[in-house]
Length: 359
Ligand code: NAD
Ligand code: MG
Image: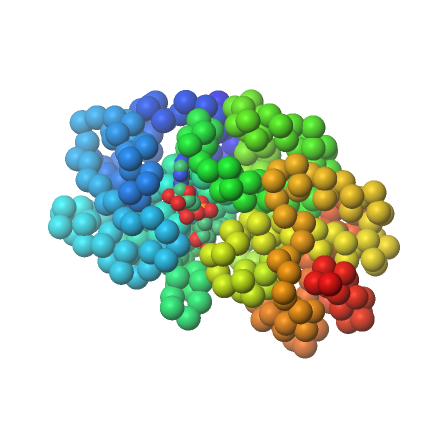
């Protein structure tokens, strides 16, 4: 097991990463102050891991909420189900919520903890690769609103995160690859040595080998924590975590959300951002080819689906939250392992680059 600390003064917390963490009650006990614990999960994950998590909480007053599985249930209605369960069970301000599941459960449980009686403790047990490397760092919690994803929420930090690599064995290949897109992103934006590691270790990672996975998850969390620490409220540098996301959101939007997984859209989007960086002469052909090789080795797409015109692509990209004025704000690579945010891309070059992917 490896442990990294997300450094946030009095809200600092450890992330434990490694195989076989579920079942080890000593990893949770130090972080539970009262006697009341509510495990929040969904029906898929409950079948797999609820019993073992329950076994980590002896001599405590444990209750459970099992929600339906899916992004479409990241709603006010499900949040109310959690609040109702807490009130019905008579849970007080010293209770602890445990999020057992992927990013949907993590975000929703975190927000329930942030809002119940003005804030109670919560623990994250992320069970997807995406949630282990992304949503467990940064403190963003929330739910969707019919008018927009993640529109209602709060910043709320967990007391501890247990990222058990063993649970990734039951994750589908497609969900695993989608999480890997964000892992590759960290290498591209911040650490070319890490990118080397990913290139060499992709077969071991895809085979879900714990040593390779532990390193990939720890390094991803370190990079995200490092960037978030420099810019907690997203004024500047935190935007580089969105490499490939402006293109990716256009793909998700054009396809209808949920057709492509987020990580799949981000993969094609990162390939487009890297290609645009090359077209600006910031990267070489070899850099583009290498990025493509790594994404492909992870089982990820390099191109958007056919049938989206360049004009539609540009229109959807303009909806991106990062754009503050008329100019498109993009995250690109100034060199491998280093990202930048720019508004200086000539419109003609952007159009020509997208043309090559929509032809
Ligand atoms: P998810 O939570 O929907 O999980 C994906 C699927 O995998 C689900 O069907 C789930 O039931 C299943 N699953 C989970 N663990 C499993 C396991 N170990 N074995 C088998 N199946 C398992 O999706 P996700 O990709 O984990 O998270 C996406 C969500 O995370 C989105 O709502 C997104 O907005 C949010 N997110 C939040 C942040 C943040 O900073 N808070 C960052 C990135 C994403
Ligand atoms: Mg993302």
